[in-house]
Image (cartoon, rainbow, N blue to C red; front, side, top):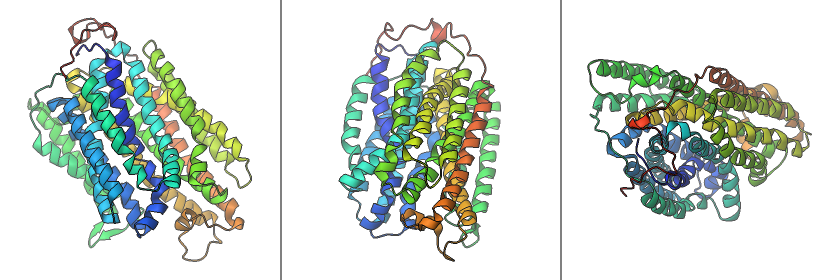
Length: 506
């Protein structure tokens, strides 16, 4: 493990850019109506503004994690930051939706280069028994970004215009670049052979799987074009990924170096942690959609007003996460993670129970606060438990796997909640005009008062899906093993971050 004199400034420098790219996974959703109006396009095209970003973000994560091991996490992070910042400028200057979608693909690629490096650097500059607070900060950043995105997006769109959800990234990106250059050390690189076949199989398999799941609802889970069907893409993607795993196993058995070291999964906590974070990714992506629809369609709130109901969640999560991070270095993270996941499930079941046409709006602040407690106890403990036993040379690969499973969970959550909402609306709103797309009607905010009760019921039923998913994650977290001893980590006993020797080869 590299000794770093000031690991905390290095971490804070990385968190600035990490927060920015995670916000971009949610900030665009509130701007979709204005983008449709400003670029004179339709809902199907504007959906791709988000889909293209998520697709380009999720597919390369395994590869970029491994590249960080090979060429240095700092170098890859800075390259990704430059790509992301320039792509953000391009997004804001786009004159038509095709150009905007292309710019979002480039943004997603930049984000994919950056994300695995944040966890990899934490794993390498903080000793395992002092990593909890760092993972707590990383986790709080990930959790709060999901919440802040819609709030910030609503404010920027209402005050300055949709272009500014992208322009705001430019000064942040410049500041983040300067901070990373100054405070993040150049860590030792590890020579890795390049598994070309593994790269191709993982990229193709991930693309087919993510595209099929993400766009299934758009094509009504039927034909995409010609003989190509949604289910055909999903099944083919799964087959290719199975071939990828088999190839990784064969390569490892022959003494080669695979893109995905399957030996990582021999660690019990790594396997359980990836399962848990997939449930978390599924839930945090799925639950905001039915609540936002309810706030705007039934209660008549603006995008900014509805997003502000998430403030207790963001504030409490940010305040508690550092304290939780300090505690998990001294105790089994299993208890913290399970508690947080159970709190999240409770908050979602509570929200589902409140969704009615006449519920006082202030009451939704209560489950929002409980979600804040949940977030503080989820991200740091789960991240720390998952990566605690990784060797430094496997930090990038492990981080790539962790972030890939989180993104796959998010894609699954997005697709599943969209399909469930449509299904429940069809069941609960039989009085809707024949052939009228209820989903699009709800997005426009036009819904007769007579349909408010049915719409509220449909949204309430939809929230039960992410609530059950996070409950399953809580069950998995209960099986986390006790953290291993860290004596002799890196060849010496783990030094306190404040007293470690400098190795700032910037």
